[in-house]
Image 1 (tube, rainbow, N blue to C red):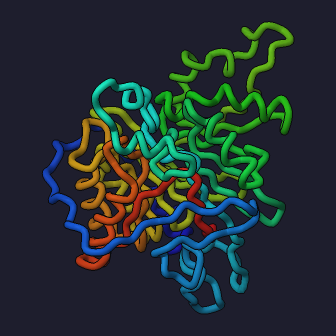
Image 2 (image 1 turned 90 degrees about the vertical axis):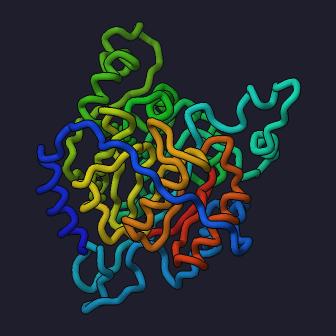
Length: 372
């Protein structure tokens, strides 16, 4: 399916036609298959900010999203560029891959009698179990230059940016797209003052109206700047209300993927070309599955190893969704401290041998070259 076709479907499906109904009752899903091989992602080296490492187990002679699959005229499927052109190289960076409380947990590190294996490992420098609030950044190359498009700025955004922005040569935040209005998605908006005071004049924020209404209470001084004491420095943000239909950000088409994040609570995933990102989900409406067709890279919520919660997919449900959506590759995100990176990835490797499912856990700082 081409990007134009996908966008047309999105507009037809989402233009007021996705009912705000309660999600259906949860279903039981089979457990994770036993491990059959030992395979894991190794954390990338960041000695050179311009280095673009290819990840183990991708096993592709191309970057993600329709580069090497040739078609008449040399244009990759899923591309909206003119015939004979090639989409520009871009990069997806996982700014955070954890829950709202993050990993390690203070309560685990201070427990007088019990030792938490995952939180203990997460203290180690460079350990992939160290996870901050779920967020990604698209370093999107356009004919006019590179745009850094951030999805969510949660409570730990400052700490994530402090680690990854200098290491990866990132400086500007050219747009922020919001999935929902929980603190782990919007709690870091105040930290953007460092950018708007010292790097750039303002930052556009793309947010659904329901979440904007929440921000009027939680971040009232960023929306109504008349209440700010003269001379005080706050983030200079430009709020853009989005609907559940395609919109453009720095020459990139963004297709909202409406999902449920608990009973009656609406959240958004987003599709960028052939990349589908759904960070907070407890159920997917049938209408949204149509927007996930021909997804090459699926990034999906997987909170815990044994079961789903009322607001998040657990690992068994997330795997079942991969079976249904059928992406070329899936990366899970939003993991809690019961999800040991190496152990779960070893288990997931068995699914490649038994079912041909290419699934792994993401980790903070993971970088993937993509074509948008």
